[in-house]
Length: 298
Image 1 (tube, rainbow, N blue to C red):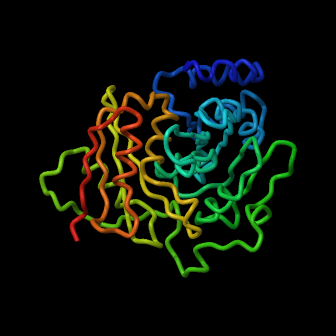
Image 2: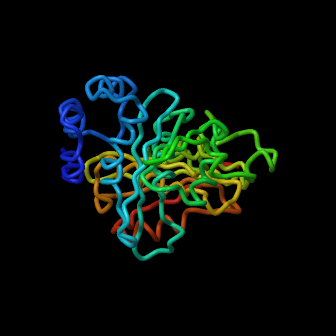
Image 3: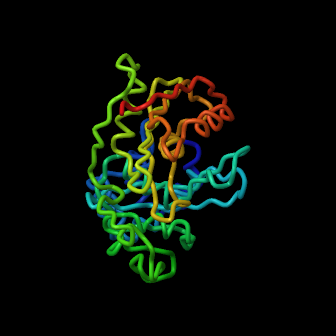
């Protein structure tokens, strides 16, 4: 079991510990549970899925990296598939606070990057801030998305975000987590494999407001590759850059950010929104200077 989970794990009910231990102790446990695993845990712990999500919140919060606030927030997104996806807040020293990943963004992008197509609920240990409420409003199933908080009755997102401004106000039909492929290709036909994975991420990014699709791929010293896609928002500021999406996935998988060996960013040349420079700056802060920028063929 990864050391970050040990304290939270010991606080779980005994029946849940017994059922969860074989799963969470796997070396490749990546902070998610399949629908079958969720059902197994529910049966063993005699909890329903909502109660199980609440019980597992301390494990999600244990994934937090709050180097500035020292305030751990955990979230669990339940997909339409029944899978559970952990999420936690993530902060970065040396860059603007706007680069922070919120726990709800973390769980949602985690689900999206694992190709989940919609969410039933988001369970979180603290009330979602306005930033996160707006981020969730970009989802296809935002009108039926349940927000679950300790000590409160579940409520749909509109309860927390009344009179919302969102994609419908801008006549946008393609929403976050929809299955999409922009079909872009690279200018450099001889681009390496890492760049091609970044291209695949860019092609599945959500950028209906700027059309500035972008993706990133990061390779670590272990040989693993993590990709991230741009997730744009109608209110602009809650948009999640591709780098943060990839770093979040890497962190949830338990890999230290300092192990990034090289990276590739793919975006449109002269796009109105560019992620190349800030990605290189942030990765340099993490000790990775081998980051190549590739452009899409127009």
